[in-house]
Amino acid sequence: MVEANATLAAIAMIAVIVYLTRITGYFIGLQLRHIRGIQPVLEALPGCAFMAILAPAVRQGSSSEIVAMACVVLIMWRSNNVVLATATGMAVLLLGGPYLDAG
Image (cartoon, rainbow, N blue to C red; front, top):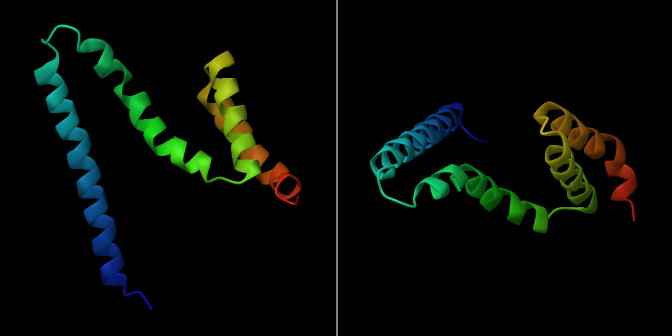
């Protein structure tokens, strides 16, 4: 059985690490803005970080997760509507998951 104190300590440590990572990236970005040619990299960085998390998850995902991700990417590309894309991905997972993963 996991102790409640250990769980709370782990959550607190994760929160601190995430906060420090974000704030450090922000300050590094402020220092690097004056370097010529670095602006496109800084603008693309959040997308790159997101893809670094997303790509391995999709590669190991089930067929319903891959279809849901494809729907989200397609809707974001066509409409640029985060709410609609997220709702569609969740609907595919909830409603289509049992049918897509059955085979």
